[in-house]
Length: 425
Image (cartoon, rainbow, N blue to C red; front, side, top):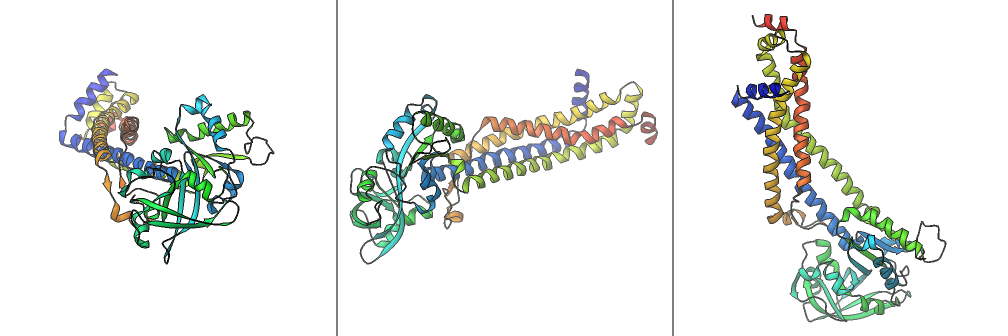
């Protein structure tokens, strides 16, 4: 095998310009797919981050009734003893090592009013300290400060502007409570935020959980308990562990065979809403785009190999006449394609990795393009640097180079030595 490899190296050096063209072609294709993979991974992570932090968490625990009517944010479907549930989850060793935060929440639709004007909005009530590390609204404050005590509210800068309000002013919230009564409370505006997400900046606010349980008369109950993990891809596994452990602890869990009232539904983010299905579809589409780009880049290797076979017909015939069999001929030409693919894929993977690193630091600002969207996505996209994906794309580039080299190599292997020598005699 060594002599085949040595001969292949000598052959690709015979026409350096052609070899360089093939190497550059596959290098550009692999560099593009590596960067595209990192960038699209960043886009998808951006979407997952916003969907999970604003809506579902990586794992959501809520009553079965709330799950059925979640789009209406019902105030009569509550987790009655959230502290006991959270304590039970914290006592599961396998889950605890994966968990970053557990956030009990109440989400409700309402009308914000300054007297003569009203704006439809939705609010999130949660533990202010926990939500600072989850919703991260404290990082988006542009005027004033974050929540510190009861009776305070922060809201989007655009929502405040439409109501003619600013920091230090007061605002009234009107909504329906858990007892179906109409509830009204005045809050002091302590901060205005700007996230870059249109749907949040125009119609979102946050208040402390203590205010919401009193204001909405939930008796300390919450609508949902959201669990956030170190790695969102482990959500299905951790969700299954929590279901099993809570059922053993005597907490009624939907799907565990319990017929008790107030069953809790435990779902990973992949089971909630339409966004997860869209994200999975996008992952499949991006994979096929990357594969097609790699094949297009490597296709020039196939063309060059075909030209090489035609140019070296007499040489192939002589080698076969001297004893080179079909299998060795096939290996020789495959080795030539593999060497070009190896060099090109390696160079392309390194360039792609460098591009991913640059854009993971600086990002690309698409504010003008996504400014009018209500889709939960940040306007600045950052690439993801994943060495394992880079290695996988390098291997894919090498594999594709071998695939496109096979037909020319097979043609060379099937040449009849006498006919090959005669054809150029």
